[in-house]
Picture (tube, rainbow, N blue to C red):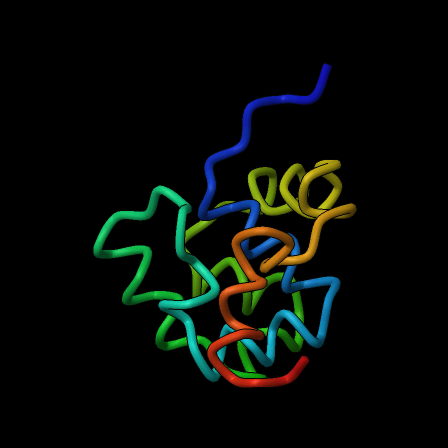
Length: 100
């Protein structure tokens, strides 16, 4: 059984791996995080992310407030690896932007 990982970490773990979801998160964060449990601080941190934040894991930990272990677990978590932001939740992003 996989370790319980907070929604915020799952989002960050997925966008570390998936450039298309990262771009969607940069463009329309509110649509992408729809349905995830996030604090206002986490929302603000997501809004402030940019390409520089993803240059190294150290930069990403600094930008997100997650520690290295939390980030590592999130990146390897099955939900972060197998489901795009927007599969069900993220589909709203694509409908809003008429990409399909």
